[in-house]
Structure formats: structure tokens, C-alpha cells
Image (tube, rainbow, N blue to C red; front, side):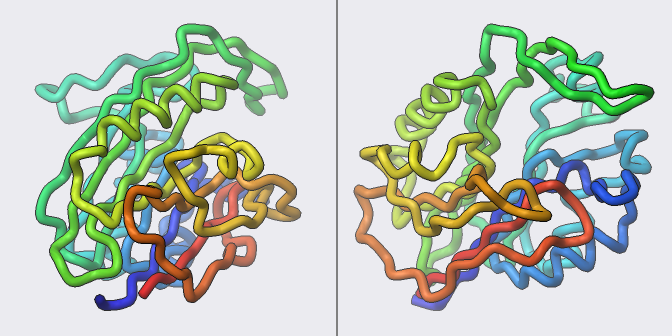
Length: 259
């Protein structure tokens, strides 16, 4: 099996926490630094005015030298404010969701609906003044990519779970059932909005990396994870690391190399 370098990165829609700007070259530089064969992305914009109407997944795919990529929207409109569930027959307009880019050919893509918390959740907004709003939880999804044979992993799943306590665990259980028939070895990459100690207690998954990822400047908690399905033969990671603080996002990227 050829080695495989996996990474997950919550982009914060490509925004820098230092100046609040979205600059395309910063995203390109960050993705190139990761040198990932497969990269899962969360908080991804496409055609949003706040990020200059950029297609962040497409930019990341080109920067990574990917041969396959996919963006899966969770909503159309502005996250936290005025949004609707995406309509597949209306692909235009400002979308937001998750992405997956791969240097390895993808045999098939499998989108998975994980639902949304039924309760309103607190959201801190900075403009025009710092406020805390109660907003609807956005729909959550996962995107599975079944890779061509020959790599250390056969199926890679990208996701971004709810930050509603308990609901994220329910979504992870739903995800486990949804991927049960997909070929292994299988890994899940993403911002799970779960601390490391909670993930360590999950019976169906094994964490391949235990290290803080948030906040980016001085990480104190691990929200971003790379999980191995315990039903598959366990690997031995060769490299486990978080990146230094990159030029974008309030998260650090998490990287694991297998093979």
C-alpha cells in the first residue's frame, strides 16, 4: 500500500483572524503547506460576498494538485442569518458547506445527510458590534470518497458536526450506520465539535491523532479529528501533527500520514 497523507482543516471561510480579510493567496499558501494527499475542508464558501465570491474548494483543489474534488453545500444564503436548504436544481447563488480534495482518483462519491439540531444555538457575531444571537443550527452532512485501490485507506469521509452537545454524538452514530457498507479501511476527517476525551470513549472509532487544534494561536482543545473505523485493521500513523498557525482560520489543521 502506498503511503497516504491525510489532513482536515476548518477554513473559517478562508478568513484571517488577524485582519478579518479573505485573500485567495493565503488559502493557496496554507493548502500547499499541508502537502496532503486527501484534504477535508469545513466552513467552506462558494460565491459568498463575504469571501469575494470565491470557490474555496476549487482553489484548494488546484493548490493541492488534486485530481478529484467535491463541494457539498449544507445551506444557501448566509450562515447564521438568512439561509435555506440547498436546492439541487438551483446550483447558483451563495453556498456554504464542506469540501474534499484528493490527489488520488475517487471511484465514487457518497453524500450523507446527518440532520440538524432542533434547538436554536448561540452564535457570536462581530459586526457591526459584538453580539450573541440565537440561530438555527445549520444542516449537517458528510461526504464519503471511495478511493481507487492501492492506498493505505480505501474510503475517506469528510464532515462537520453540530456544536449542540449530544446532537453531535447522535450525528456521529448516524454516520457510523451510513458508512457501514463502504469499503475499508475507512477514516473520518473533520471538525466534530467534540473534545478529545469524548472521542476517546467512542466504541466504533479509534483516534489517530490526539493533540489540541483550537484556538489556532494557542490550542487548548481538540475539535478536529481523524478517526479510524475500528472494524478495519488498525494502522500505525507515521506522522501526526498540527500545523503551525496558518494565515487563515481560528483552527489549526490536523495531519496524519499512513502507510
